[in-house]
Amino acid sequence: MTFGMTSSAQADIISASTAPSVRMLTYNACGASCKHVGVPKEQWAETIQTSVDNWSADSVMLTEICYEQYAALRDKLTEYAPAWYATSNGASGCGKWDTVDPDLRIGLAVFVKTSSVERLTTGLPANPEDSNPRGLLCAKGAIEGRTTLSCVTHLSHVGDDGRLAQAKAVRQQVDTWAGTLPVILAGDFNAAPTSLEMSEFYGFHGGTGRYGEVDESDQDFFHSGCTGTYCRSGETTHANGKLDYIFVSADHFRFVQGDAMGKSENMSDHNLLRGAADWE
Image 1: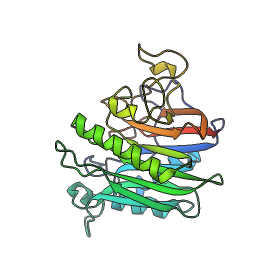
Image 2: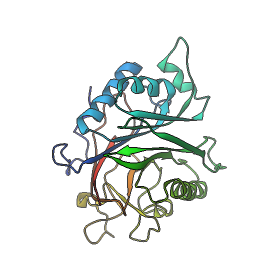
Image 3: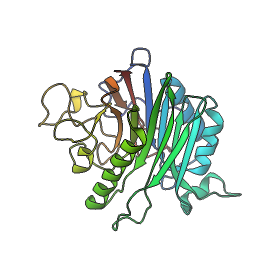
């Protein structure tokens, strides 16, 4: 089973043979809340591995991933240095991945195609409207010989004020950890591209951040307020719109490209998002 190419948003599919050299993937694995009918953890990991291999991904950033899923994928991605951060130890839905000795941890994962990474983690501000703990995970390691910070986060799905506070915390912490290093920042931000939360990251059209986003030039998904050759927009990655992003620091990357892959049965309620960029 591989990720399909039949979603409603496939007009700008980018080719693995022609895309820029730095490749990224992000995916909300929906490890606890999706049913994953008939998909054991080994098969789940093999499906993700196929997408990683087909894209020649340098950095893979996953949200809502149960520990058993992470461990199964870690065992398959032997050329990648892994990093894991449990945001909760009590996700009952994670028990389906091992019914004999269930591990109920859920969180974030990063895999970088390099020999080793430095793992950096922090919790995000609590959101009074969201009981789920939220966090930020970064892995510092070489991509094509350049030390790079690959980060993943998952912001609250409810509570605009709480989510904005989390977005500000992510921006500040990543800036602190990165210094002058290149940054790839991905995950499920649970916010529309034009929202205040995403203004923390976009470096244009009212944004105060320092990033471009891989799907910013897809004119097929520009909204009515878009002008020029890039915009705060992009393909939908969930029934609620574009929630998943791959940002890259504008000082270090150029020629970004991205597209959302079609959903695969019994995998997630999100589309896998892949991106590419050249070094500046």
